[in-house]
Length: 382
Ligand code: KG4
Ligand code: ZN
Image (cartoon, protein in one colour):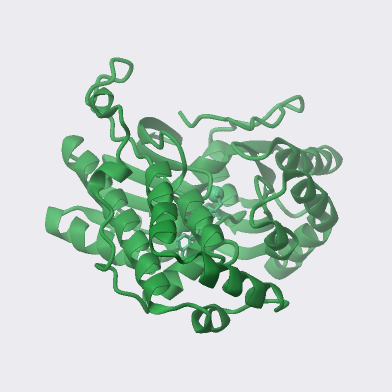
């Protein structure tokens, strides 16, 4: 094994992150500066503000990552940075900084796809636990605020390749959590708060028919000539509309307005604050929404796992931090006889350790980026 200290940099969305990972398996530091406080008043990420915040935080975050790892600028072996997908302006801040650093230090620069980073977060977690055995084929569900993708992952030597066999036709799963939370005035980001509030509600109270989770164009997902296999696409805009209808038909607008007023008067509202401003109908709605999301994600992923006869499942990305989602996948995968792995919670949401880990095989195969590469906001994973 070639020993290498890789400095990872991640700025694709609203987290400025830097980390040092040794040889793809030992996290020496993992610094994440979250911009939640900046975007909270707007109920979502404002791209222009995200870029400005990255510019402000970039240097201190990298310095801290090096200091926490006991490393210096000259002691690292390579600089890895997220190339895409993500917000173009946000990506450019990380890329410009990484290029400057690589140039000044005369170190190799490695461009990493953010989605590959999420997949390698699982591998990093398993290597950290001493699990070096991985049974292929692997199916990875990458489920976050911007993405809901299913990839078949293959490895040949140090070269990883990915085949997309499913994606969302409209909203990403995390986006649905965020939009529903915004609609119900529960704060931003929505996923963590919905996760916690759901434990106080009855998840069977509101039935969301499966048709609201499916795309009108269901026949299309059976066969795709481009990859010769079945597709398992997702759709989450319908359930968001269904929640809105429920709010209207159950006259919840008044209580939502009161909650919005009460929580916006607090500097940093906590879950308990939110909970004390939620009635039973709202808690039941939140829990039922989460149940429907979790069941749909698990059902489609497990169906894909059966169709492609996979041995191992990865569930990763911000939404993989969800408690109910983890339990459901553990149960269903056990019933199917498939191994399922998740990253630890700090490695589920955006971080730079996953970028440094994904860069390690590229470091070994000397797959370095040229100095003229740029951000790719809609970058595909292949
Ligand atoms: O991976 P991530 O940090 O950024 C993207 O690449 O998008 O994912 C952020 C998303 C947000 O939509 C957030 O609401 C969701 O992940 N999320 C969760 C939980 N924690 C974060 N969704 C459900 N349950 C959670 N516990
Ligand atoms: Zn992400």
